[in-house]
Length: 218
Ligand code: DX5
Ligand code: ZN
Image (cartoon, rainbow, N blue to C red):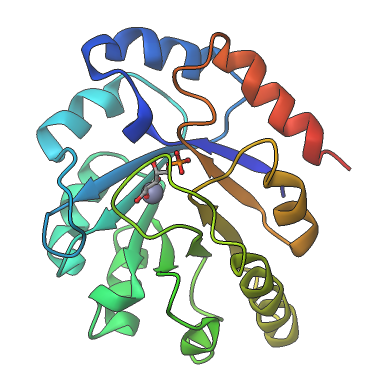
């Protein structure tokens, strides 16, 4: 699967209506929404009052990436947004299996994210239960950072882990996705590409989404 998920973190928040307008007109597949708490990551982004407005501005699936401690406390809030995917960090979940179950019981797809230093092998015993594994290809907390090259090897190891286990999980990457990195990431086995600074702020983001898609179309 080749899905593009623009990351709203890179949007011009004084002009959200226009940003959502190009997003809706584009071939983009999911809307990626980054929630930060200033504890799990050294930054704070936006919370549920903002997300409720954003959710009303699109019919496309919402991918809510929670960079917060105790994400299990917010399952019903994310569900009430109408989100398709609830994305929690492995490092933030002491009882990851239970949290994945709670996300499923709420009717959402469960995505588990790994920080750059967390090995993919930590998911061996839960790989059959998750719908998406997202690899951070930068350190979480900020947009427009440099892609970590070691991530390519990590994607290949995750691809192997998923294929050998018979899991149907999609591989998503977040951070530093652009015209340079998208092809090697695709070749390594990525299904869902989050992109912030590569799209928002560009003269023609709709054309930019199309360009990225064309680069990875087999
Ligand atoms: C970073 C966020 C990303 C961010 C990606 O912590 O999770 O979603 O917006 O930004 P780019 O694509 O600019 O690296
Ligand atoms: Zn993100």
